[in-house]
Length: 235
Image 1: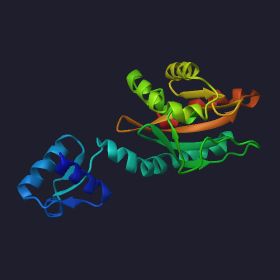
Image 2: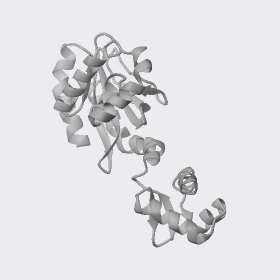
Image 3: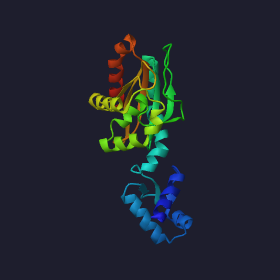
Image 4: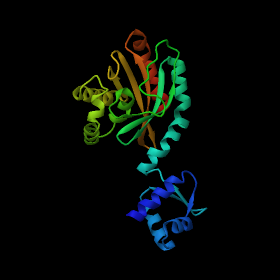
C-alpha cells in the first residue's frame, strides 16, 4: 500500500510531466517488475494513464487527488471566458470554484458593471461546503449520505458564518436539485442571493460557476435569462 501510494504521490507531484517505468523503479528503490505491477494496478483503476507510444505514465482522470490539484487549471481555462461574459452581459460578480474535499475554493472572480457587487470569496480563498450559493452548486448534487457527512464535519465552521440553520440549508438543497442548479438566499448577507451552476469533468462534479446578486426587481428581470444562458453554455 505504501509503495503504491508513494508512486501515485510521485507522479502527481510531477504534474503534466510524464514518468517512465525506470524513473519509478529508481525513485522507489524497487525492481522494475514490482514497479510495473504497481503501475499496472493504478492504471487499471484509472488513477494513472499510460501512453503506449512513449511508454510513460501521467495522472489519470479517475484520481480523486488529481481532481483537487489540477481541476483549478481546468476550470479556469475551460470556463474563465464564459464567466467573464456572464459578468459583462448581466452585470453581476461571477466566480469560479472547485471542490476540494469538504471545502470549495475560489479560483477566479469577474466583476460586473452593477454599482453594488457581491462576492462570497476572493481568489485563492477556501470555504466549507454549505457556505452560500457558490457551494450549493456542488453540495446539492452529491448523494444524501455524503451531504450529511460533510455538513457534520463542517458544522462548527458553518455556524460562524451562516445566517440560516441546517434545516433551511437542506430546504435549499432540495430546491437546488429541483431547479437543476444551486440556489441560496440570505445565507451570508441579508438580501444577498446567488445561483451556481455545476461544472463537470468527464461526467464528474468538480466545481461550480457562481453568480451573486441582491434581491430585487432587477434580479427578477434577469434571472430566467441568466440561468438559461448558463444552461446553454455549460450544458
